Amino acid sequence: MLRSAAILLVMLWHVPGVAVPEFALRLRRVGWTGVDLFFVLSGYLIGRQLMRAYARGVRPSFGRFYLRRSMRVLPAYLVVLAVYFLVPGWREQPEIAPLRRFLTFTLNFGEHAGEAFTHAWSL
Image (cartoon, rainbow, N blue to C red):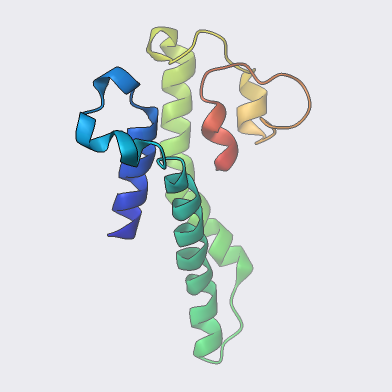
């Protein structure tokens, strides 16, 4: 339920102001908090996966943990990346960082990153 609320807040934040119904304008001003809420909830839920092993008296396997996380996130990420680079007309902005920066997860280090898909740093 909280993750849904966080997602809706973020979506509301990104909707152009003229398209937001009047009753939601006040809520839109705090839409940025949806990102914070989503990160806190994600950290809790992901951390809980590791702590579950400790609760059973077993040392968690970090290799298995990272493999499971990768298998959950990377397929969708790579599909979106393929769409962004193969169908440039679907990007939200024409300028995009080089593909190598997305594949190495170095989008937010150093040089200008372009404008399209800049939120990939959060992955």
